[in-house]
Structures are given as C-alpha cells and as structure tokens.
Image 1 (tube, rainbow, N blue to C red):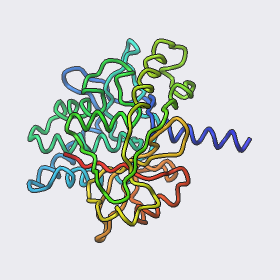
Image 2: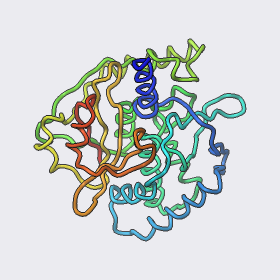
Image 3: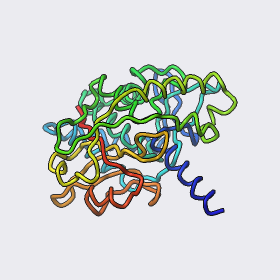
Image 4: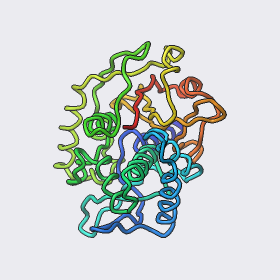
Length: 295
C-alpha cells in the first residue's frame, strides 16, 4: 500500500513539472482578446506596473522580480488541462495556480511583455504561447513542449533563453525518454488516443538522440560562482524515462542566491532557505542542473 502511494505521489510531481499533461479548468480561453479572470487581470496589471518602473533592469532581473510576485501562489500539478468546446488544445492563462514549469513560463512572459513596451494581455498571451509551444505555434496537444529538455532546445532556438556552458565540472548527458508514453494513464489527453500517443513516442525518440550538458551535484562547489539572479535552474534526474524533473529560478536574498520555485512538497511557490547545493543534497533523484539565462 505504501509503495503504491509513493508511486502515485511521484507521478503527480513528475507529471506536473518534468513532462506536463493537462489539468484543472481555468479562465484561460481566448480568441483575439484573451479572457482571464478578475484575479488574474489584477495580478497581471500589478506586475506590469511594477516591472515598467525598472527601466534599467536586465531581462534576468525582470524575470526574478516577476517571480517574487508569485510567492505563496498555490501549487497545482497539471495546470494546463482546459480544452476548448471542441476538445482541442488551447492556450491557458492561469496566474492563480502554478506548477514548476508554468511558474517559469509566466515569469518569462511577464518580463518579455514588460520589456516590449506593449503591456497588453494580447502581447502577454503571444509571449506565453511562443514560450510554451514548439516554434511558438499552437497546433494541438503534441505541439506543447511537454518535456523540459524539449522546452530548453526550442526556447534556445527562439532566443528566449541561452544555456550557460563551459562552467567547471560540466558533463555530457544523454537519456532514453519514455515517461509520457510509459505512463499514459497520468495524461488524460493520451488515454485511448493511439494516434496522439504515437506522436509523443516519435518526439521522445527525437529527444533521446540529443546530448545535453549539465552541471553535476558532486561538482557544485566548482560551478556555484557562475550563477546569477534570474537564471533558470533545471534539475536533471535519475528517474527512468525522464531527463529533467523540476525547474525554478534564482533570486537574491540578503546577498545570497536562493531557489524560487513551485514546490509540490510545500504546496505553494516558495524561496528555499538554503543554497542550491543543499537543495540538491536533499533530493535523492537529482543528478545536477542545467543552467539557463533569460535573453
């Protein structure tokens, strides 16, 4: 019984962060003008006003400031399940409940919207869609960047982020990805849809052939000095069929960098009390990190 409970909890966390399925309903449907709830609109407006005052801030600093606005926002796994009236994939805007990936996506989209000078919901929705979907094109469930390693590759090509290379201790990493196709029951959209599963399998094969660079936990003291506020931190994992299981961003607290992330354990967006190396030590499945810098 305890083993089954632990497996269920692991699926909840991984599906919410490492490879995202769909989830709770939101006020995220829109056509030309996005439709979002009153709380979302008030939050969006407040963030735009604040970020708009930071004229000299870098993109990474804007991302960190956006992240601070989300502190104590409730955590929710699979926050993107909200098909339209025909059951098709659509962009979801939900600033009230977050998983680790939607936190990062929203922070980036808010920062990029502020930097653009066009502080409208239409611009924010366009930025969010560009970040969340392959090549920025929403074309069904399989076009969403479910695996975060896919997210990294695509958003690097789009110029949203860049991977920080050549830090001391860096190593190569290649894994066979199969988590989504091996856990179809955890993804409502995949249940009973063999054609969609096949699309996911094909994508998994493509991603499995790619070699990544990561910074291993045991070499943390070598690469910690290369971190900056606003950097995105993706945690590589020992979990079979998955390469990245969690993601967050770095913020400065009393002169020290700390991880701001949507925590399934705490149930909300938090800032870690300890440094990144301590965080890695506390999570037995973590292998190390992939470091990304907002552009």
